[in-house]
Length: 135
Image (cartoon, rainbow, N blue to C red; front, top):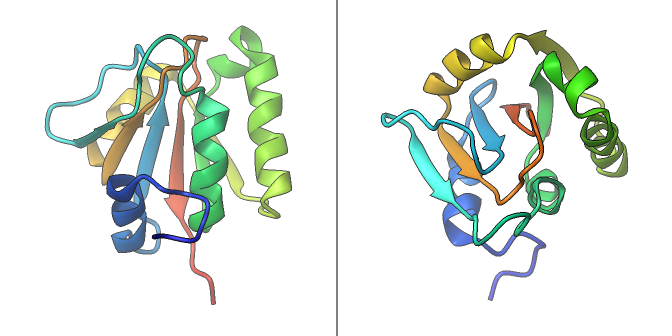
């Protein structure tokens, strides 16, 4: 049995094959996932699993050098934004933050290696995680 924190085999596999600067997206339950991108659907019901409860195990396996966020999160969901920053701090990562509009965010996700859907039901709880390197 896998020893590290992230147990979902499909998600772990996608992280293991991602290269430098490639990206995966973590999204809320209502995010429109493009048909051409691999979907890893973890949503069970509203808030299960939560966005942060999925982000933290991902950060235990993935080195992130840049994140992309919709600028709307700062005003529409400031608590989630704070939790995101806290999660990166706990993971001892300080990625560059790139701000885009929500519409631009949706376009960028079309080039994600995979999109991970959570049960999160709060606005703009979406993040693009660009892979860094561990050396």
